[in-house]
Length: 101
Image 1 (spheres, helix red, strand yellow):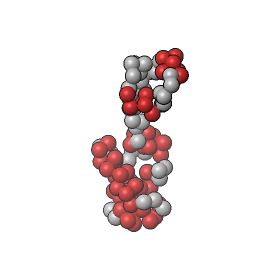
Image 2 (cartoon, rainbow, N blue to C red; image 1 turned 90 degrees about the horizontal axis):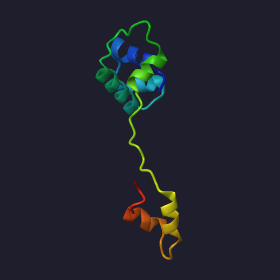
Image 3 (cartoon, helix red, strand yellow; image 1 turned 90 degrees about the vertical axis):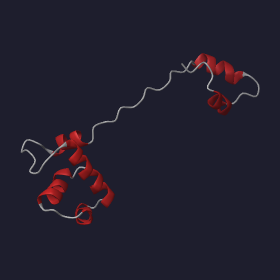
Image 4 (cartoon, rainbow, N blue to C red; image 1 turned 135 degrees about the vertical axis):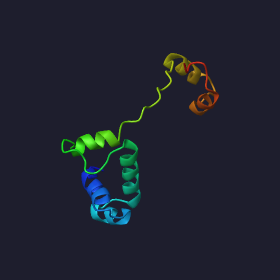
């Protein structure tokens, strides 16, 4: 959602309801609620500083989440296991063999 400045103006400047803001911006009410929650948790107040533009505001409110590192696979061992009779990928998935490091 890239209408954060307008959302902030409507909510904090004009004290509009979530439903009014959602209708005005063409987004879901829950999206407005989530954005307002992010504004509050970021400690932003109205009026916003003049140097804050839409992209900077978006970057501040919607920081990328930290993802866990995926397990490294030993593809040679995995291929060897799959070559055995009766072994399927599903079996290997549930068993979590030692080639997942």
